[in-house]
Image (tube, rainbow, N blue to C red; front, side, top):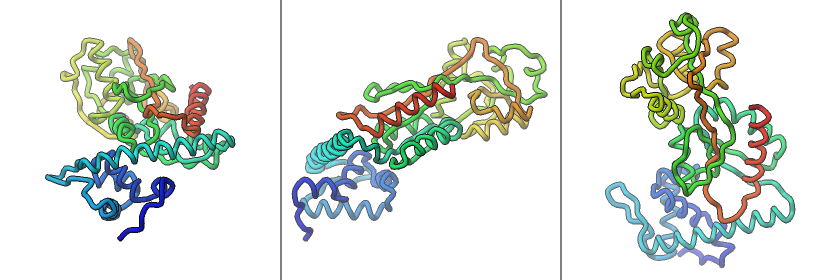
Length: 311
């Protein structure tokens, strides 16, 4: 028999309740294990201990699906309130004492994570050494999903976000350009490039769910070019792979100007301006909190200043 829970303090710090709460949010033992950096058997064990304490099932597990039982729904509601109050108390005390510490899990789409966040987070960590930062990388669609399911505290994405339940704050305006190998016909012709010009040549594209791909698709539509009539010769999952394919002469692409400085200096790629020009916002995405989280506010303020400085 498990020892009884000794009031709210024990509940707030109890590992079993945190594990249960994560499974309840994600409705997946596998995803909860990943989010908590635990093995799946360990997650299952913690949940079973809590079920033994309450002497009832908290989850129904049928046909590879996980759903909360009525008892599980009730525990989940109280767990949400307990953890909200715990975080509110913690942040309230930190506000009072002026301490800037804690932990944040940040998620970023590939372009931002590889080319923009390392320097920003490095400077932020130097200023606030007591803040622990973790970074998860996915495409924009994956990052928004992680924010929606509370897997990460803050997402940074490169495409519009349609979920009105999330707070979206633009932090940077990113210019996109056409790139091609130096010997490409478009480079020899010179001048600006229209969407109809792009449609004439093999095009190297990002994968489905990529923010860059979504922005390019919408640009083509706005310029009366049917994306289905594009000559997509390759679909690749990272900017580095795409740049390599374009350098090899396999096609052209549209990409962020901020990530091709090295190739332009080495003359392995050439940049061509779009007509009309194309830009996209990089945005912070987060849940609507019931209380102000000091460490989050500090990071947001720091990042806004950083992007203005280096824009």
